[in-house]
Image (cartoon, rainbow, N blue to C red):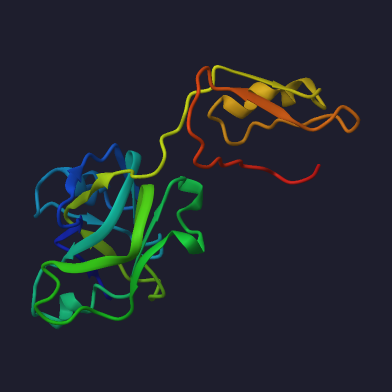
Length: 226
């Protein structure tokens, strides 16, 4: 049986600072190999998945950051046994957890195994700077009886360089279709609550920012026509 084993997983970039991890989750693991071992500062304590239960770790940074580079640490630099257990690594970064597996979330993918003496650490650089809150490290396209094991995760990056989100002080809109589709749903931080207009009442929403700001861009999340 193959066992996938890492000594450490690091997300890093030259000139970047270490970012706090708000929470971490992963595939189902054995009780003595809990995912919390990845953020305990101990490079020997290990997280291991159960075979056939998936092979991934999901990191929540708690806020948006620019992520540029990922380092993976293996248990041994030259043993083919351990090198073979670092196969097909895929790293994704996204602003929303629900988008972590989208095509445009890809930071980097490495097919096959690392070269000898290049897995402590093996350095992965994102194709471009990825702006996100969530970082996912996965082993993909391997047999169902393989394990994923790691001992530590650290995330490095810089503060998000994009425009800052502005606070809205109020919102008005055309008549809504139903009472539970109120305009206030657009500002409640819940991406599943909806605002919908009536067919014959106009289709608009006006947001009051409470002050004057320079416009850079806006982003709307829609569900399409109802």
